[in-house]
Length: 317
Image (cartoon, rainbow, N blue to C red):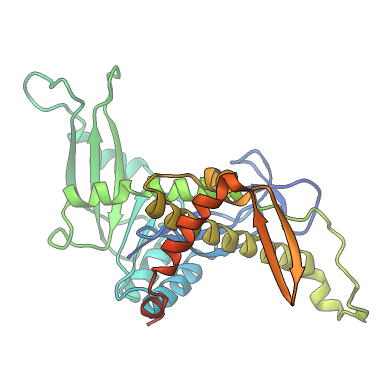
C-alpha cells in the first residue's frame, strides 16, 4: 500500500491558539498533516498543527505512527510518497531505519542544478510531434545529509517553451527494485491524493472554532489550570478528526454507490444526491424511522442491496 503524506492550510478567522499568519499561503491558518491510502482513498490520520509550522515539522513521528497502524491492520508493506517539503535528512533517515520505502520530490538547489546541467539538452535529431521526457540516474548527498541517496533527474519538454523543465525525485528503492521509468508514474499518482485533499475541503469543509477563550468549567466542574491553556487547540483537533471521519463515511457511500449505479461521482455529488434529501423522522416503539423522498428511494435501495452483499466478516478478519 502507498501512503500519501502532505500538509494543507485551513484558513480561519479570529485569534484562537495555534492560528498564525503563514506567508506562503498568505493568510491566518492552521497547518495540519494528513495521510491517505492511495489504493483506497481513505484518510488514515490527520494532525492539527499551528499555522507557522514548517511542512516537515512533526512529520516523521506522524508517518511512523500511520505506517505502524497500516502494517498492523491493512497491509504487509507500506510505502510513503511525499511532496518537496518533507524530505529532510531526519525524515529520510528515520524512514530508512524502519525499513519504510519512500519516494519524494526534492527542491532544486545550486548543487542539483549543476548536476543536471549536462543533461539539459535535447536529444540529437528532429524533435517529435509530442513533447519528450527522459530520466537520469544519479547519487546525491545533501549538504546537511548523513549519507548518499539515489536521486532521479526528470527532464521534459513543454509545448511552446524554449527551455527544458526538470525536477528531482529521491527514493530508497534501488534501481533493480523500481526503475526510473516505473518510479516517475508512481510518484505522479500523487495527483489522485491531492484530489482527495481537495474533496475534504470542498465537500466536508472542516470548520474550526475561532473562539480563543479557553473554558474554565466543563459540565459544572472547574478545569485544572494547565490543561485549560491548550483546550481550544485540542478542541479544534477533535473537530478536524471528526471532519476526516465524515469524509471516510461519505467516501464509503460513494464507493458503494459507484458500484451499485455504475457511475462515477464526486463527494459533492454524493452529498447532493444521497445525503441532502427531503425526509422526515417519526418515532415509534423505540425506533427512529427516516422517510425519504420518492425520487431518491430507488437509488438508496440499490445502495442498501450493495451494502448487504459486502462480507464485513471477511473484511474484519
